[in-house]
Length: 192
Image (cartoon, rainbow, N blue to C red; front, side, top):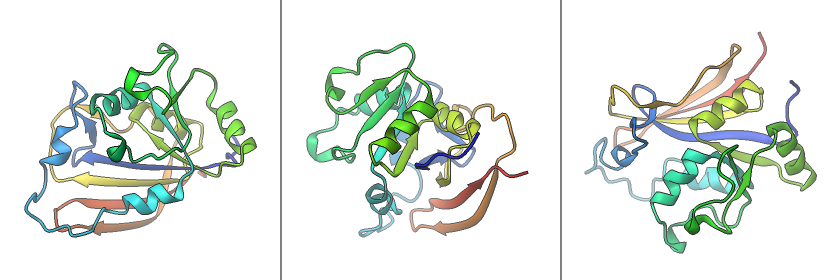
């Protein structure tokens, strides 16, 4: 696979043992883990800087359904009006509260990336475990920002599925926050 003209980045949180959700898809633990009494001030762990760097998003169906279940108000909708594509071969229409905010897509990921490039888009936010794994298998992820939450779930939905080749993570940078979360940033290399 050759690399995409679009930069593709991951920004995601996992439990310390590598899960992105409980077995039933729950993510409530993200809000109760760590030092909840810590004064984070204006610290957002780089989220808004990341959001300001991307101009489109690709997520999986389960990720969309989790966001839909939060029933966000317009003020809570952090994605602005950027194009958001939801990958699904089975669901053809988003939930009612996601209509007009996301577009369903059942085609090939490479064709989607070509479409983004043709539209002048430059940096995609890739979200959802299966979607991230698919992009890694196509050698399309360029950067990963993974925030480890100080909690062991013991089981759940893992961040990564079966990856069919070696993926090297380079140029590691890490930062520990006062709430005991630790964020690691990597560039991604597919060279052997």
